[in-house]
Length: 70
Image 1 (cartoon, rainbow, N blue to C red):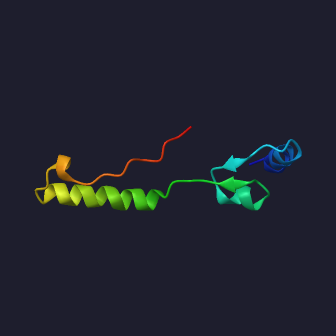
Image 2 (tube, rainbow, N blue to C red):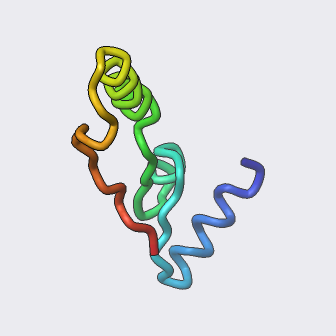
């Protein structure tokens, strides 16, 4: 990103918590990064599809509540 350094410097100067989508921003000085693991989500979806194709009822399959967003 073109203005990555300026954004991070501004957040640090103003003492703003800065959470970014990619690890690169955190490595450049941002507070932290948070991103879902897309590969894990696809593997989990494939697990459910496989179970349904093998005859499981969708309502009987276990589920995980996604993390709530604020």
